[in-house]
Image (tube, rainbow, N blue to C red; front, side, top):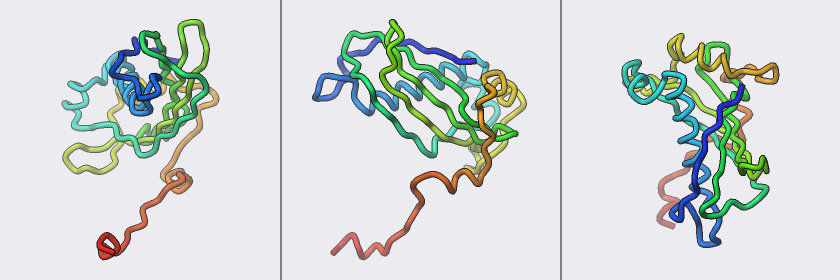
Length: 164
């Protein structure tokens, strides 16, 4: 199952090249996910009651066709991957014009965190049920091992490097 959210591209969503700015793609994806979560009764108020929040750990994009001001763009929310307990998830977002032209794709991998402990947590059954409704036969099962496959990992440096 796929959820779709519609946007009207505003002047403030554009960059100097007069097309949809990279930062706007990130914001549209986040807003589409929140619209999806609100529809599935896991919006901001409910998340606050549960004491959990979604956190994106990795996000990447591919762009195919420019999107301009005053255009309508429809952004999909698809569950591409999910752990058995839904604590880890991967959304795919596709950007379409109303005539079905595919303009861009985003992939966002994240986890649910306990807002007090600031640690990864298993979401309530309501979240698991909502996520399960949108899984397809192609949805892959994710685990913590999949974090190792992400392209970037932390590498701390000596703070003295900043003053050289």
